[in-house]
Amino acid sequence: MGTERERIAGWIREGKTALGMELGSTRIKAVLIGEDHAPVASGSHDWENHLEDGIWTYSLEEIWEGVQDAYKKLAQDVKEQYGETLSVIGCIGISAMMHGYMVFDKEGRILVPFRTWRNTITEEAAEKLTELFSYPIPQRWSIAHLYQAILNGEEHVPSIDYMTTLEGYVHWKLTGQRVLGIGDVAGMFPVDTAAHDFHQEMIERFDGLVAEKGYPWKLRDILPKALTAGEDAGCLTEEGARLLDVDGNLKPGIPMCPPEGDAGTGMAATNSVKVRTGNVSAGTSVFAMVVLEKELKKVHPEIDLVTTPAGDLVAMVHCNNCTSDLNAWVGLFREFASCTGGEIGWDRLYEVLYNKALEGDEDCGGLLAYNYFSGEHITGFEEGRPLFVRMPDGKFTLANFMRTHLYTSLGALKTGLDILFKEEQVKLDVLLGHGGLFKTKGVGQRIMAAAAGVPVEVMETAGEGGAWGCALLAAYRIWRQEQESLDAYLGEKVFGGRRGAVVEPDARDVEGFDAFMERYHRGLPIERAAVESLRD
Image (tube, rainbow, N blue to C red; front, side):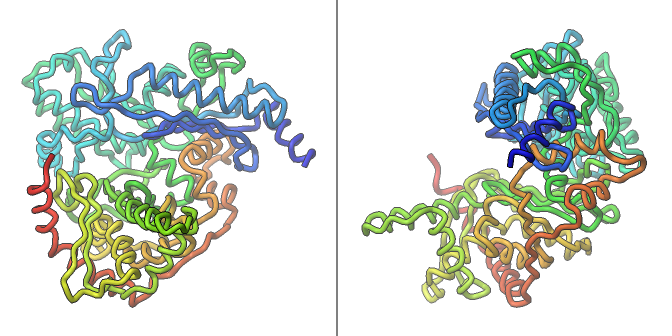
């Protein structure tokens, strides 16, 4: 044990480390890895967005307070475990929740409060831009926020000197560089995957669209420079070192990798950046990322098109709702158990109920539920109402009840995946699963395999999360061989060919899930009626 500690302490002293920091929606996490790519120390800071004049936001003060606190706790962890003061790091990477709107004037002052991905206030702009580009533009993309501000006649627009995302902003302040990783670029504006850059023809269309406004900028002027994984994204400046480490121990000059979004770091953390691989993150919300062999034949509003950190095209199916309603029902069963004097732990309860679901009918016995705590764009809902409904002669058993709630937690996701796999004939070799749905061994995997119709793999390292994935991108920046691709680096040097537990789709489960989805789509008017009838 002492030898291992001394080995890691040596890496820390010599800067043979990489740091990833990710600003998620509820937690900022920093992870330091050593030469073997395994985490050696971490620190985190909890935070929450808040509603300000109808906008979901975080203040600049909250951003830096959280970044500094997470870094400070990481440095303390290093000191406590290895007796070393963290002063040099091999490379640093910054990641955050994708999309949103941060705009600054020539003096670097923010013009309006940060508008996060959570805001659904750009419907008019998103629809008009989708038509203009013949390319799906989701409401949360930066360009939709910009054009909506233009449509609204907001007075700050002429003063814009720089528009970026949260990770782009933090990276800019640490390095002075106005750059962004290609995966996050693809969450701002459509990209040209061949050029690994913003799509020039679409930029020209946008400039033409707003030309009559006479703004002092063209779109290119205010966008960051697009970079792919491994490219030089600048170094930590003296000012940046003081901003990150308030104790003043961290030295400037540390290389930094291109800042990436949480989708890109999730792909890195699950070794799913290669063509015909994908990953699905299933927790409070759920999204699937599928690396494409070629462009889709049609524009699908349900499908976002983004890229891997290396610039390969990715189809993204993003849904607002996943396990919240399922968790609420599990909580109800726990309350019942408590009333009978039988205390049961959460892990055991999930294990019992999830495994009970596997005893149910493949089509859930005619039962139906919707897990819509909030709206779901894939099925056309601005609001949601959690709902359970059944025919009087439905097979109302505990097994079918739990299976129904597991199925419906993936109902909106399957709607999007069916577009990819059935309409577009996208081919996928494996889907890497991570998140709370997969915590009970084997069950979430089997349900996901039935939904997607492809093998689902869960790796032990998937739980390390996006901050670890960001650290891997930082490691790739400094430790890769010349011409070594990101998927080769991850596959050989990080994951070493290791496979996790793989569950193949069961034909009866797939058929049953398809039957359930027919009922799910027929029943959407029931959910619509609930939304319209039940209001505060």
